[in-house]
Image 1: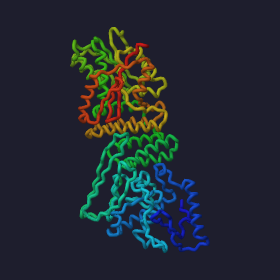
Image 2: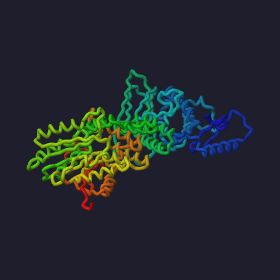
Image 3: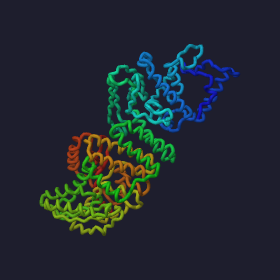
Image 4: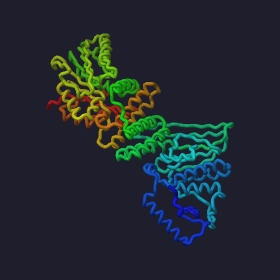
Length: 616
């Protein structure tokens, strides 16, 4: 769209120090009085504002008011401004070193005119007889232009025809002649940031940018520092530094705006936003960058309807990734340890015990329990284990292989051991008659589930059937470990917001782990969960985590009562955490007889134990 000619032809508009418009002399004659022209222009501007001002839709979502009709001209003037700043001598910019520059994205056109006229007055038509010099626009502070989320322009080497509003990465440094930097300062008590243009003429200069990733849920606080040193042999070039903390905030806003656009089925806007998210994520460091990248991928899959695979190969990969997650951080170890402690206490004095594991995987949970049983006073019981898991991708009997390894351990520690593996696509396919149960007088049974029950919530009647089977088993203890978050609500934006907080916290907790293959694979493990949670719907969406309170209501209505975990589990779990990062950041807390493990103030997983209610 081109600018209306009647607004600008033959006129030179300036802003006085009081913010009023002053029309300069015109080189062309007009039959209308000056007052009539001014009234006509005012009416046209009011009409334009009533029509929405032809604001760019993408930038409007991110909170910036930039007219679509001005973008090409704005970009052209930015290139002119960049050229002039490169040619002007140091003395020509000295007054900018102490003057605070204020700008409003909705007034870029007039701001650029004033900057160009100040640097090169001869290139701008005379302003009339008032004798006023061009000044900067209204002192309303809005620093979103140079730090833009989706509103970057032709600064930093983009071609003259590349005006598609690409974001300027927060840590990107573009060097030009006559160094000048945009330095940002922020205050926790003030939402406005002042920008200063500083000139740097020394050839041996150093410019340092310190950036802090935006905090999500109060848990992310990574810091990245970028330093650029130019030596005497290099030409002095301009430097543009953009605050990564501001970009981090814009990144979160863009993620939320994209989710809202998807929910309202505005896929065109969602597609534009997800591209901006990718650009903004580059400016971040550490956990923020990683989690934003995984969420961007998940949003893109949802937009383009590219659902992640749900097959045997994917199950096998998830199983392998979970092993890396087990080695990297304490979450799975905490889950296994606390569940084992509850089972061990429930088996006290029993001669024959049977554990039915709904989450067998690689059997990582059971060596520790077997060793504890071997050391039990009075000798170990006969230990029977039934492991249930999904089929292998290559149709191999991987559950049998796990059983063989456990049998070797049992033999070494002198524990009488029985094992049987069950392959099932879903726990809802199980029936109590398949498990070869023995009378409770002969054998005591415990049922264990770690991160499995939430996968049944997308299958109609699935969780009710499984809890019915557990009741038929009549276990002395039913241990359950689940994620402590609500990712199963009916509203997509609400699920997205909660998952963004939850996984940002998880990724942040991994930042203290030394870089290794286990750490990378752990991040991929969490990324797959994010992808399923955001990109999938219906039965394909299996990551349907719920809060402890929701599980408690469900178990209570199904005939179960809470079995409080003992104080020993709490103390020993706290000792376990000391092995990871010295325990710093991790926190164990007791909640109505259940144990929660969290990062700082946010609970992430919960272990609970249940028994059959005497009322049923």
